[in-house]
Image 1 (cartoon, rainbow, N blue to C red):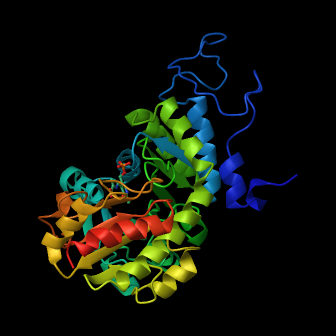
Image 2 (cartoon, rainbow, N blue to C red; image 1 turned 120 degrees about the vertical axis):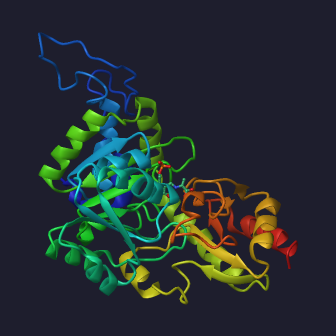
Length: 384
Ligand code: P1T
């Protein structure tokens, strides 16, 4: 009998958490669209009493997420932000969180504009610089928080090295693995304590559901977060869990195609006369190219770039593409284009984390690469 740890990601994506329904034989996990469960006697039940606490469709999703990340436990949430907020409830007033200085705008907003009002101290450092991370640790640092690759600058941080620094000081390392997905990078296997996802993105994969997840190894951390999940109640509905589970089945295939297409587009942009700079972890001029090669199995589907024409040209290109839809979010099968400064990262505009207003971000989908290249070529021709 194979254990789940023997299985490869392609197999786990299809099978983890899913088994035929014992009552009907249904091969796919049913959508248990129920808020409550009949009890056999007072406080005697089959493991499910109320759907904020537990729901079988959510249980299946949580088992799949744990298996994909190589973790023992996973918890699903109503959004990526709900997942991050619940993790941060591990931190008490008077404690310190050391965060990366390039994170999703909503994450910065939660840290700086919401949680800091409750007595939690935050500092923001460049986590690509391991020495800077070590220097910024404080006696009361309880959590080191980073994204790798970051949103939107696609910087790569050394998870294993930072885990060692955090652990030496008695802190946890939390990694937001949204941009890589467990198909490309598994932070728990590199020493991280907590992995978070916006499952809205690559894990769901079809831009049809908002969700979040936390995956971890430690039983005490799990039990506290499970308590908080129920106490706070930011849980996903059964239909959302079903859609996310359905998306997971093709995660490995999709990530291969996202990376395949993005590589071609990154090279095309790097050679284009209208483009001043391309940021993609799969290009050998990326500052952490070697680390990305070591830490990730492929560079992923996200590309950021700057045009010689700056913000005006960026806005023109974002309006001119046809296959790349002008929209926030990422990680779906369809290609998207956006300007982080006025869109996804508007909430950092008046902070030290502010993004270049001319930066363009692509979420490269799984379409036929030459079609995507032709669309970008015609859009860039308008600013060349
Ligand atoms: O949108 P939500 O599911 O709540 O997830 C928040 C979140 C968390 N972490 C990262 C790295 C993210 O990119 C996001 C959401 N990001 C976008 C909506 C975006 O377009 O960048």
